[in-house]
Every structure is written in structure tokens, then in C-alpha cells.
Image 1 (tube, one colour):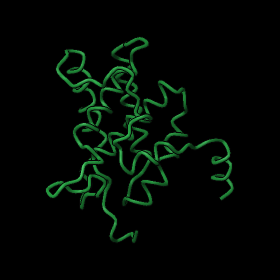
Image 2 (cartoon, helix red, strand yellow; image 1 turned 90 degrees about the vertical axis):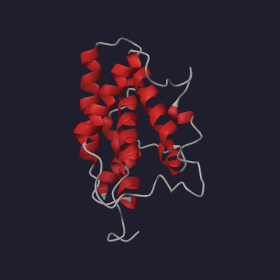
Image 3 (cartoon, one colour; image 1 turned 90 degrees about the horizontal axis):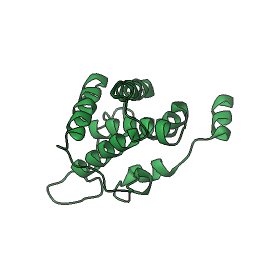
Image 4 (cartoon, helix red, strand yellow; image 1 turned 30 degrees about the vertical axis):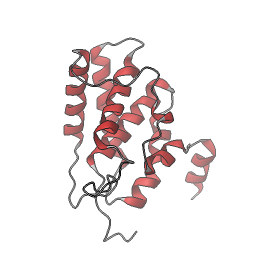
Length: 169
């Protein structure tokens, strides 16, 4: 895609990638670096001016907030509920006459670290009060089939071999 024709990353995708980064860190004990590198190539290929440091900052603020809540081993449930809620709102694989491609970028940058973190905090408080939709028991984003293009990126893995290749080039 030509750099002039690229648009900005959709807000929902920015929030979802930030949440997946937190999920990988909490549940899979995977360093953020690996998660960020996994999404970096996809984002740079498809969207304009996306910096993974924005995702990293958002993920760090989300983690910090979860630490403030002092949730025990069930911390991952809030993250799962949040990701599930984003997917239900967007329905990435749904097609129709009046529905545009959810992966289509926006003409101007509509996401921000602050707004994404505030929305996550509000969701967590609402979820703890029982006011939000919750993911079904056993739901895992890595097994979700209704992700469209993002499913392939999510299934890919960035490992030590990729890191070495990344350092060489």
C-alpha cells in the first residue's frame, strides 16, 4: 500500500492490540517486546504513522491500573471480557450493505493513549459491578474465529529466531 493512501489505525484495533499485549504478558508470561514485534509489521504495512511505543504505553498503563485494583489470579478475566466486548461491538467478519470494512483506516488519528486507558478503566469498573457483557467461560482470543484479518496476525508468533533476524537487518 502506498504511504500516501494509508490511513490511520482504527481505534478498536489499537485498543484490541493493547489488550492482547497485556493478556500475553499476564497470561502467557510473554515479554511485551515479543507481542509488540508480532503486531509491528502488520500495522506498518496497513496503516500510517503507527508507533508501537503508543501501544506499549497503553498496555503499561492498563497493567498499572490492574495492579491498583489488586485483583488476584482472575486478573486475566477482566482483560478477556474487555477484548470480547470490543470484538462483539465491531464484529470484524460481518459483512453487509451498510457495514464498512472495520479494518479500513481512518483519515485522521482517532485513538489516543489517554482515551484508551480511560475506556479500559471505565469498562473494568462496570464489569466488576456487573454492568457489562462478559466473555463466555473458557473464551480465549487465540481461539476466536470471528476476527477476520487480525486472526492471522494473532496466530503468528515472534520468537528468538525472529529477534535475531530483526537485529541482523
